[in-house]
Amino acid sequence: MRIDIDTALCIGAGQCALTAPEVFTQDDDGFGELLPGREDGGGSGLVREAARACPVSAISVVEG
Image (cartoon, one colour):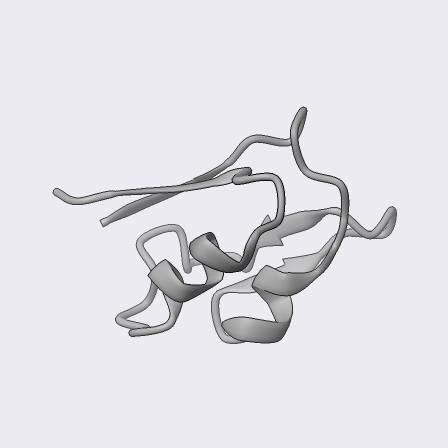
């Protein structure tokens, strides 16, 4: 799995960090980012839910 956050779309709603805090966090400006070493989702079952929770669809999850 590969996770991408489109930083141009992200509005800093924080739904990703609230839904899957073991994978996502927010940077100093409040925008979503992946935790170091979690670029593959770290086995979390909540990654897809976090992507769906993003109000601007800034998160994409690609298998493989």
